[in-house]
Length: 175
Image (cartoon, rainbow, N blue to C red):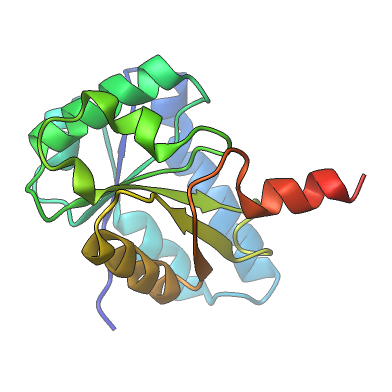
């Protein structure tokens, strides 16, 4: 099994400096629950790198997952910049939970067909459900994301692009 590095980009802020501590807490929790072994904790932490420079963070990456607040303008700016900084075969996924991919990629000039929505369920280690959507995204981008999410232990589905996504609709209907 090949392992991936996890590059985390954020502006220079307390959350950037605290991210490794939060990840370590999560890994220790998983170890204590018997979900991973002790050696996996340190091996995983060794693969986490933090950056306050987007160009450095995206250099040589295979996949990008954006996890910003539900702010359309912010997502549009970040997607356009990420697309400019990555190779045309690098998929850029959004963790958005209500916005549509077609709106997010309006500013992307460099191969927008590789941009998708990859909406996870939280907490992903307990509910490994991932929605992959984007009607105008390429079949290759969707399939690559599907396989990558399976590799990560998720149970992805491909769905049409709609406001709210499958899980949000199920949760709303339950109340």
